[in-house]
Image 1: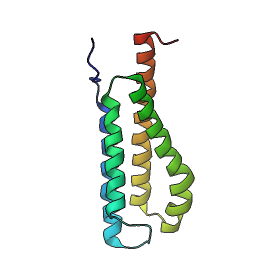
Image 2: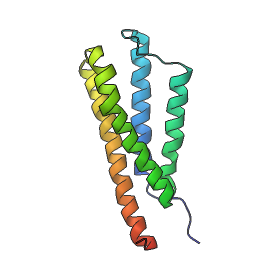
Image 3: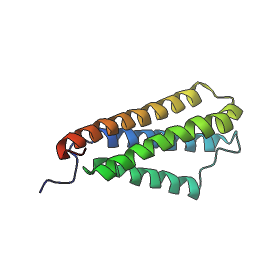
Image 4: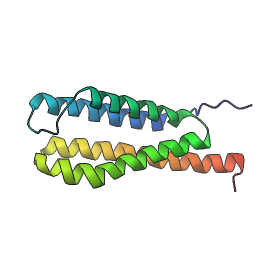
Length: 130
């Protein structure tokens, strides 16, 4: 029986880096207190913890776990494109650092999603799913 842990942890590193950068910048925006949407309380901490725990599934070498990671990435990109940028970002009158944080976050999430797709392809060939 093969181990269920995937040896390549780059996807996990992308996701953890994205969430840590986002969390750090959210806390920074909260300390500036320039916009009502810039909060950093129990709900935000619980949300980041939830996403970090969900990200840990990226190292499980099972099809359902990789699909779950891919769902996480697609969900995060969808929230960014359809909610965050139209509803929050445009009211902040984004500075360079707002744009940089958003770009790096979306890029890291997209790279993690791409690696999940590649991992799914590898699993398909490994287990001969039709």
